[in-house]
Image 1 (cartoon, helix red, strand yellow):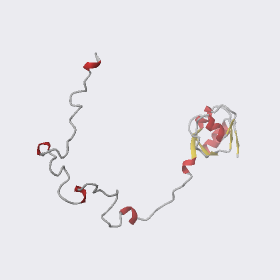
Image 2 (cartoon, helix red, strand yellow; image 1 turned 90 degrees about the vertical axis):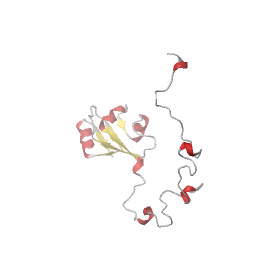
Image 3 (cartoon, helix red, strand yellow; image 1 turned 135 degrees about the vertical axis):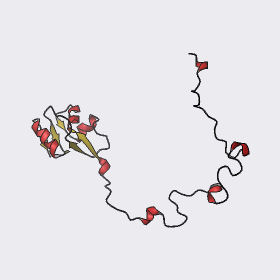
Image 4 (cartoon, one colour; image 1 turned 180 degrees about the horizontal axis):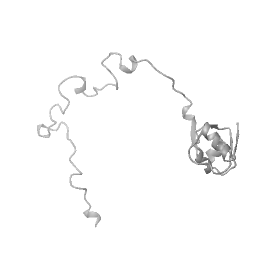
Length: 144
């Protein structure tokens, strides 16, 4: 095979649609925009959700529920991922250094998923009931 003999597969390349280039192109005269009206004119588009001056749906419907601003700050860690940390005391800083949680995390919750084979001391982390039981079963301790 030579570099000058490489070609795209048959049918992979096709001519670009040439809008407004005469009757033969199939998109001449009005160039696929129809006749008159705002959308036929240059710059004749409006914002998404605009309903011609009528109160838009997203403003007619009431706000609902609660959106937590701190939800993104809490990282989730599996019990099996605790083994990636080499230090005996596992806290937020140790998890960040081991790159188990992102640097932006402000708190961590540990969930039961996978096996915990060695005894670890967990300090200042949130734990689910299952994760708490797994840490204690492995001979570890939890410091609040």
